[in-house]
Length: 203
Image (cartoon, rainbow, N blue to C red):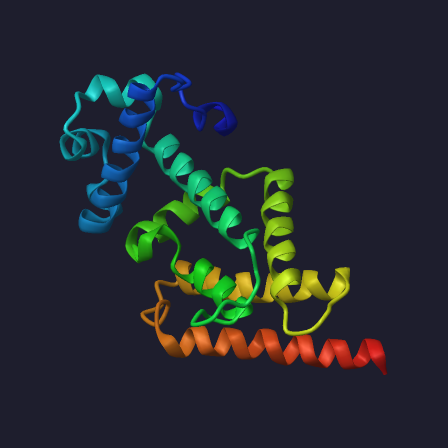
């Protein structure tokens, strides 16, 4: 069966009640994943956790894989919106480049167990166009927050290096994903590369 078809919601939830139900289902799914892992992740467990009938699950999602994909798409959109936000330095706030990296690291509400399963499902689902769009959003955010101006190719290299390291930590279930040291190393990578690339451009 075509995955692109499977991953789509059965019904588009336009009314507020429907939107609320879908939100409940997705939040319950995240909780089930975090508590029970992939082995305990099924539509019955999600329905019970959400306090809805199993029919409500299948009204909007054909299967549990579609739920995972929707969770991933929503989180991508949320993180993308944050990254595209105002990058200006504000008193008492983190440096813009660090804030961008922390936003990526703490996606999915810091639910690392759920995040790994969702990312795996999403990677097998996204089209080349969707991946390009997602990376373009990351590049735009990094461009506005970089410690030095970068050209198009340099932004490509930097964004893939940072996101690749974070994705590897997620997929390998690294116990340091949310650690301060990992964040610091990613910030160091970003600033060191940006500084070196900027000097090459001007030199």
